[in-house]
Length: 139
Image 1 (cartoon, rainbow, N blue to C red):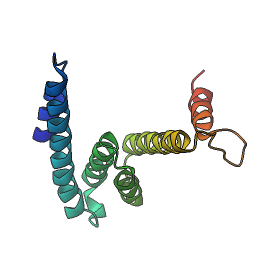
Image 2 (tube, rainbow, N blue to C red):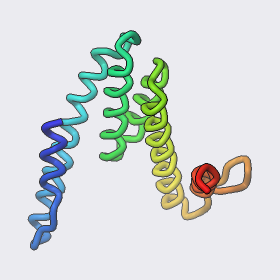
Image 3 (cartoon, rainbow, N blue to C red):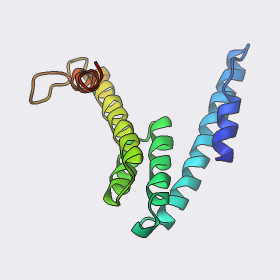
């Protein structure tokens, strides 16, 4: 978490564009280093299902960091790995939320590339389905 804390500390307004670019590079480097360390920790307990909830918490951390830096494939892989165990309900909810954010990012990326609506079997965009899913849960 040390690298992530430092990365979050670095994020602040900068008076010059050059400073901002340097800070963005530094932040991304720190997040990538934090992700590497988190992956090492998660992989070390990957098949140790008796270590729940630690196992799923570590995998959730990898997924969250991966999403933060835009590595959706790593995020999806570690969400799936975390769900293979028996994560506590709260952790599973957080994994589901990260998964929805991954789907949202993928949909927005595809949409911006194609400049057209992303359609699913229900003829709604994936973004609209996600919005409906969460607004249906909360009155």
